[in-house]
Figure 1 (cartoon, one colour):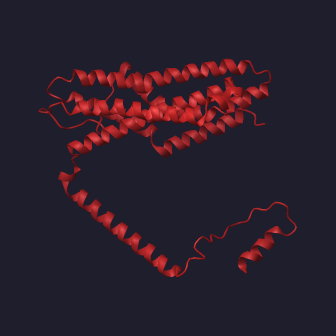
Figure 2: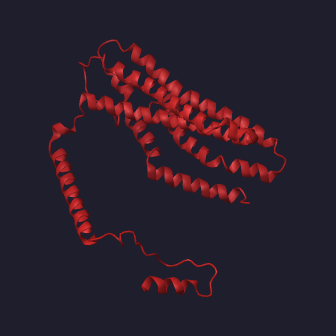
Figure 3: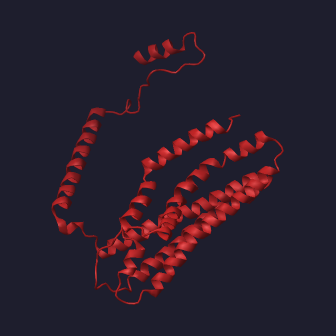
Amino acid sequence: GNFDSLHDKHHQNRSFARPQYFFINGFHDIPHDKFYYMFLCFAYVVAVCANSIVLFIIFTQRRLHIPKYISCLANMFFVFFFIALQSMTLVVLACDRFVAISLPLRYHTLLTNTTMSVMITGMWLVNVVIVGTNTVLITRLSYCKTIVIDSYFCDHGPLYRMACNDNSANSIMAKVNTVLVLHVPLVFIVLTYVCILLALFRITTWQGRVKALKTCISHLLIVALFFLPFISTYIAALTFSLQPNSRIIFIYVFNTGEIRGFLKKMVKQNTSSIIPIN
């Protein structure tokens, strides 16, 4: 009754209407829905109480603030694994943009589902091997000086430098990991966009160039938000003495979801005011 009257009211003498609100009717046909709501309420209260107890125990028991050895290695593996995965995913997206703009007629023959599946599977396997090797090599180190890690997670660099025995293999793998995960992808993406710019010059109309360039803006924003913190920290470390906490805060702030979302929105607004929308 109320829904139908509201529906009729907004569609009388109008071809396009935006209602002030909607009715959510998802649970309307569930039998005995009151018992279902009571169960959800009970489950929510239990979850809140249980998590509150866990947080209180962790807060009051200082010995629980220390990461265990295996938990530390697991944390290190997954943090670096997903960082490497994001870096290589940006490479795949750069390939996608390159083929779409430079070879548009061959896009569907080159980037098939099989091709993308092979690329993604290979990307995961390479990351598991590289990051897994770094993690396994940590287990051969002995710690007799300190167990305090100067980072906001179980960071590989500070962890292997704390060792008392030979850590040359860890140092080599750390450099290899940095090259393969950061340097090579960044160089590849830059070269890809150089080729894309050359392809844009072959487009005769200005509107066609802008339309093709607009498809790359979101990818370029993600690339900048991912690589700029690492590049800025590296340059700052070479230019002047950078405190470990400064490095941690700088990288952490740029990787916070709210900050990244705000920067994306700000850049998109500026870009839309510069680039005409067709």
